[in-house]
Image (cartoon, rainbow, N blue to C red):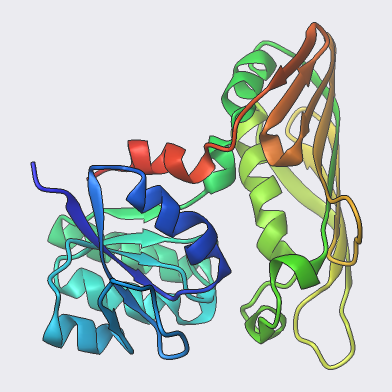
Length: 274
């Protein structure tokens, strides 16, 4: 079977660090082209300035991976789906839920795949954590997600603009894990956001949730941490404490620690619907 020809739309840090090696590391895919008006692309890979140019001039592609800021993602996804091209959406899949629902309906009409990249759910410790928690009573949850925005989003002004989500851009990774591993739904009860002057998105947030069984969930998001970064989820249960560290890569159970590998992007390229 010929490999699936993928074009990466938006060649920023996440595309270069994760998408390119994941595509090149899987024989089921080939990197057919890159698209960006601001970047020169990759050596040896056809590069175009816009999706319009790619669709008009080629090369032919079967799928696109949208690694653009979320504010412009809907129009690009809709344009690709209109041509029957499969679409991979980086997280968050859109600036609003309504955009994503509209794209889902469009994909269904043309029988194309629309795949949202909740990559943190593929971290090594997440699946065993979900299995272990399925038989436990949740008593308390603490989420500490603190990192340095200057390291992970250097020079990226879009994150501070309306729709850019600010600190919720990394925070959504934590939420994607917690909503996947906790056995009961939970709801936001209180939130305090910290917005820098002349910015439209928060740099920090303190959130309080409660699940349908009454368990309290606290989330501490901050983009101002220097030195070692904190991506930890601590869950107290009737059978002891579970901890997911390093963004879900390292799982600690009352019986001991299970270390994992960095398999997030290679993991979901292996299971993405084709």
